[in-house]
Image (tube, rainbow, N blue to C red; front, side):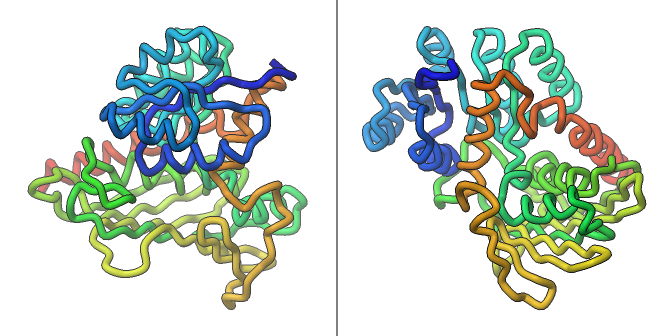
Length: 324
């Protein structure tokens, strides 16, 4: 496998699945051979565009193909854990998009199965791979920068159940189990210290979507660093996630793959990695770990502490809802 082309099945041909297909197209020695999604006609159209020879609506059909070495899952959140475990049981390496589960029990079960099968199992915690955050992490590892505080805003305008392409979703997104997962994991990763204290509050529950549309989270790491995270689906303005790192020697503002000083001066991160695309870099790590027989950065085991924190926060929020 160190020499031959890796054969990949990709499940979920929506907005994020397309990002992976675009990223994989720039990686040598990897071929997507099967595409899985719920609408067969649309799946076939995407498969034709990207030169994928097999299209289906059934993940089991792709898993049954002996040439498939690995699977990338870009499916609805509630399907992540059971589908990832199905891939491992079928003898396939798997990368599951964030979150790897929407409950702690399922996350722990997935980690246990990955350990049992010995297959590469990775979760798409993309912030670990964005060049902007890699730049900061490298400074932390060299002892040149220590995070004192992170201030993070995750803002969308999503009052109806639409995806990033403006198409109706078949599932409901979640501020805690999806969007907060990025920051909870990144905070501990950048501090090099586990989260030991976490608090959360949420706004009113949407009458139709059944989820909180606004949320506030506070975190503290064992080394004393703190994080404030604000999340909203109600924001009518610039969309996305914006990170402010306040440290002992500098302040940085990260906007996806771009990085700025605290005074909004651009920092050149073009030489941090072989690409400026975080999704592509994430996929490169997955395939490299398979070839090298090693644990990938953002393995399901490495990110499990994040899901323990999310579980604790969910319990807090459930108590608040009950009291209300």
